[in-house]
Image (spheres, rainbow, N blue to C red):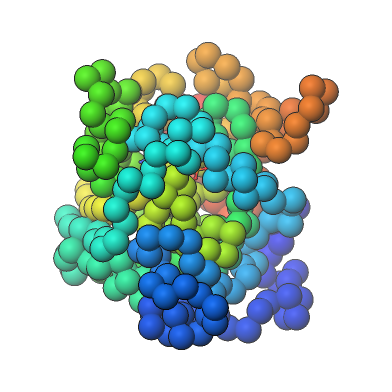
Length: 314
Ligand SMILES: Nc1nc2c(c(=O)[nH]1)N[C@H]1C(S)=C(S)[C@@H](COP(=O)(O)O)O[C@H]1N2
Ligand SMILES: [Mo]
């Protein structure tokens, strides 16, 4: 078992209750912090207080250097090294997220208001990209379910759709005459997937606010699915009745499905999904690791797909 269940965790391993603190409290509490540094939404990295989560893997984490310089964020170019160089142009302060659709409390929410009331946790998750590499990332975030409950979806809402900010002036990838994707980047989850406790909205990594290249100020993390489901810099969350479009599925429907569950038995048409290269495990003779069903999170999520043919719903 790679993931420990809450009952396996010694009380002493759980740090004292750590709750989300509002901007003023964090600034007051974090001695030595440069003035103006703050929270998700601050322009530069700032410490975040977070409780350790029982959902964390105890595998070796990928270096901060790799996590922040080997990125997919096509709004900032298709090279892995490019977002770290160019994503600083995204203005993440102030930031709002529009919540709309089949929901009781639609509004344009300030980022702080979306997070308020949720305890920030550090979740060390295995992450698997459809391209065949993986990382172990210490995210800081809060359950997506918290946000969903807060905005009160209507009974008819069956899916949650997400949209990345559309800012051509701040996103060089959007200025191209031959766009790689149909912007803005969009993703979606079935409502029950979105409510699963493993699904989080991340606002930080490595104990600090998210770097822009990783999706500041707020991005989705669904560790049992391929990385492309983890939509970055979210500006809109909509509750809908029908399965929403997703960027990669639009781009190549036979290669990228809506579900995008990590499934080593379903190859990408152009390469295998049976194994993966863990970033940071360098060297010529390092063996690829076998990829695990649901990225190893089957105990938590397999029941979501009971009775579904996961070769058809890839
Ligand atoms: N808006 C947006 N979100 C995105 C992407 C993107 O190109 N644009 N790339 C996805 C892909 S393919 C991956 S693997 C992850 C990478 O996240 P990371 O760079 O934080 O590891 O972001 C996902 N989210
Ligand atoms: Mo990816």
